[in-house]
Image (cartoon, rainbow, N blue to C red; front, side, top):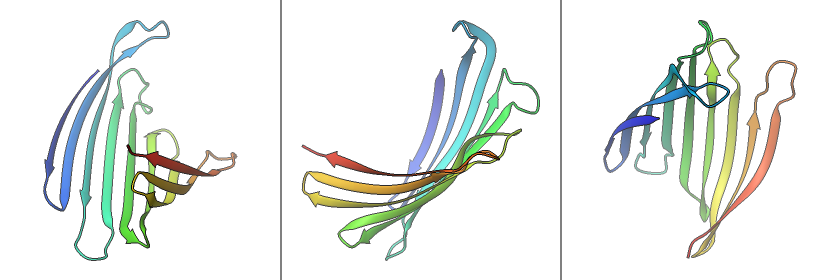
Length: 150
């Protein structure tokens, strides 16, 4: 595998472009002549004032060993983060990941709130929903992430 990334970062925004190649293997982990190729563009913008920062990303992939009509995939995400909501920050995100051209787009949604407990610990509760394929129930869950810094 190899990848190349170019990025530009300024005070309130950034953008990056990434290209990656993964050599495919067969069921016995032997390299084949096929390569999976991916291109992604990601960016963020943080406006002044009480507006949320915006993060976006888009990726396309060409699956070298896949059949025609099922050899392209795409994913995207859009996120909003409000830095000052009470003592912490809040965010919302949506997107879908690795949707094959022959399949349905299965969306993912997330909402979180991150707040500092003290100088060395942050708590982030979140709730998420993952769309499921037709005939299957969606998945909704909650979790709490705790970060310790020493």
